[in-house]
Length: 436
Ligand code: NAI
Image 1 (cartoon, helix red, strand yellow):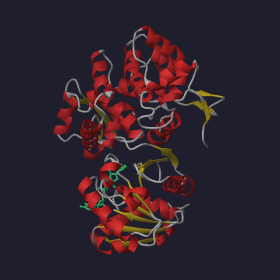
Image 2 (tube, rainbow, N blue to C red):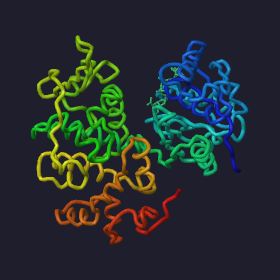
Image 3 (cartoon, rainbow, N blue to C red):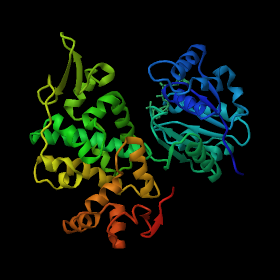
Image 4 (cartoon, helix red, strand yellow):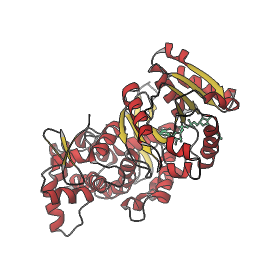
């Protein structure tokens, strides 16, 4: 069966559901947006059309959106894609899926926008038809801005369902579609959260070596091709409450031998901030805050994790060699040691996750570029650093090579990409064309 998605019923009009509904309406699709009751529906439509950043770009698109409450779930019949975007709670999602399955049309595709619940848990014991027609569609917030869409099949999902969802995401919504597997946090957040959570611990060691929080953030931004928020600044944006939730989910669902297990809880001084409710921008400040001064100016302050007090934000202290990936990673000082520890550690972590979380390096690189706005993905960065020499060096030290570095070493390749990025090294050790 080939399937085509032309209409979508979104269940749950919170941050993500409203974003997905708005994006689909902007793409010209017929949309049904359903939420718990009239009040929730009104709030959902306010997210779609109102506020500082409405989910739709074109005000005319709102006409394509019809709304309904949970009492009218039967209206999903006739919609091609049923997209669940309610609260992150397994029992609530399962109860909803049972209702959706009974009401949806034959041939429709069902998805969950879960960020961390395994798909296999959501559809365990559910009817065969649902198990064949279901995928995870993991969008990033804000939906209309973030390019990444991770599509994840379940154990019994048929290829035409994945193909229809991927085609719709790419062609209709203009998303960068990445194919992920049903493993904890999928691709982007698996690597991105490792970077953030291990970063909090590794930055603590770096502070012990004399690096300020400002220097740490300056190193973890432009020099390594990451967004200007750096480490602490990004966590301020996301919020320590979300990071705590993510860490607890990782502690339950990471494989037993995953090195990320060492970092699922916060270092003590960050835990203290979390417990004090100093969560980040959403509470008026976390690691940084901006306040108004009496003369109408702005004061930027840093919460110094080592003294436990606010102080004026300082300029970072970087040398010329710290401004570029390869020279930073080679620097024989505390900045270089920190970059090798955190960025190097994250690259090696990613290199060990094929085929566990993705079938190839291309899906991993794209997820980090499109979901976390990294200028280069982990394997592209490794190529800049010289992965063959790295493998030789690690072997000489008696260290185990991460899976893809071992493949590269075995194949005698000098990089993960060749021909100007047109071909990539597969886990079979052969060269493959990078898909468009
Ligand atoms: P939200 O809190 O903004 O919205 C939750 C929605 O669920 C609302 O429409 C609400 O009315 C509805 N709801 C609340 N209680 C309910 C219940 N008992 N039964 C049914 N519906 C109920 O949440 P958000 O952020 O939109 O998240 C939705 C899903 O998307 C979650 O699974 C979340 O993990 C996932 N997600 C969130 C991202 C984010 O950055 N916020 C990113 C990617 C995925």
